[in-house]
Length: 366
Image (cartoon, rainbow, N blue to C red; front, side, top):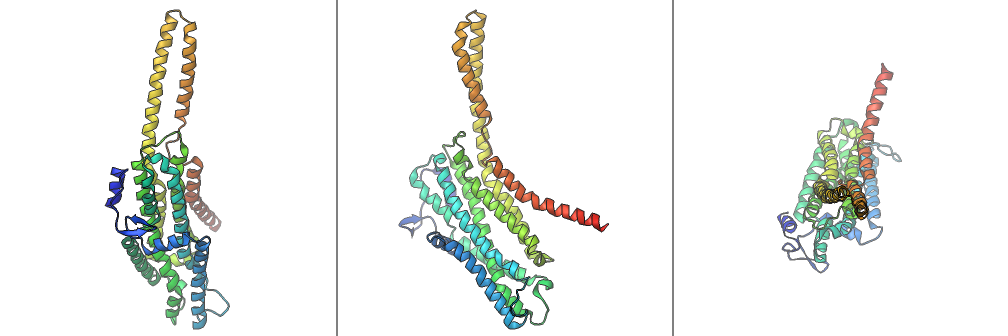
């Protein structure tokens, strides 16, 4: 990632490129397997949705067939402990597909505020749309180990009776391993997006506080990721709650998911908030200095008895006051108010409902 730091510091010059050829252009790194899959799906309309749904159906058919043939559940029925755990891999993959698309659109909207040459845009788009192969393979490996630990720690109420439990493991393995490995890559991508968005904001040279489109551009990506991670955690504590009882690896993963969701929403946009505050203060100071200058001039003409001579100055003063009011209403947070309210609602409402339900249950029980 050191080459990215050099890009931020030295733009408009581009960082040294590796010899990997992608779409005829020299790429800064070789993309990982998930990056290649996402690029392949992006080039085929409807393929992403079909792949996500198809993977869920494949996991369901595999697990159910194994449990039917082994006699773990009666033929024609579904294991209520199997189905909730099969959605993690399709969900994470779908979030990556949408996040990638949102991030690229946000880059296009923000680009005028960078002040960088158009020739630098393809490289930033490449970095947003891909992750290095070594990083992805490492994330896949860590996710795989997490899946092993979570499946080994699954409670007996999920795995069923001890005799023949090996067939339950065989039925659960694809969903567990795919869920944790793809989620591991989703964590990697979220961390990369945080780093990249922060770098883009830090290096931007043409931010206009009056133009809200670039200012709000990346909030679409960060709020999407924040809600996606938080929803995943709430899903685990509700629909898939049976698998969390005493499952330390799974609970650790869920805790990390909530933290990452909050960090993803706030962290990459914090730097531009400080820049907007500084720029707003500078604009307000410039206007105030001119207001004071006009006020001094008006006082002088009034004291000299030249009342008619103050008329043109009054018009200028009114214009400056209007501009001062406009500056006072400039946003300094890089997301629209409704976006912030939506994220806080998504984060806090389920907690409030859970607490209220617990209190009501306790009162009824007493």
